[in-house]
Image (cartoon, rainbow, N blue to C red; front, side, top):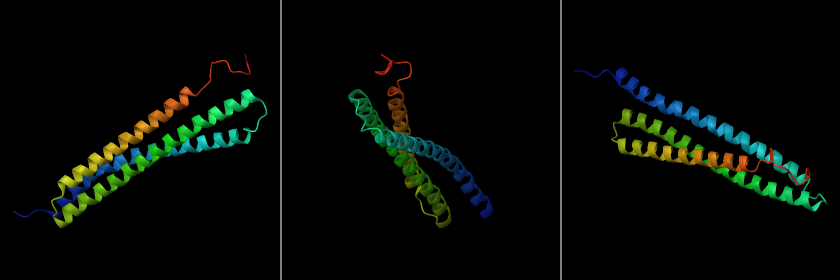
Length: 150
């Protein structure tokens, strides 16, 4: 019985489709995170321009806001880094699946390990994103009286 090589490669392509959709999702998270990081930088530049304010209460508020923005930037950067690592691992996983098929290597364990590593990295990136959102929301003063309105 002969094996149809076209059928074999189509199976490998079918198996590679799911990780490709995963890449699209990871890319969306990277896009959202980089947008948030850009907004953090924009806000911090604006505050830094006003940090020399002579009013001590206003100065203290700006310094506190800058500290929060610095923390958010670190979390966003961590999330972006972990998401990019996850995407790279998925790309390597797809390449390894094709290498296994074309060259007959038995690297299923490596492919499984790459998938687990990619998922752990993605989980870390999502947790960093979630933490950054928590820090951002906690720093909001909407509905709370400020020094200026008291």
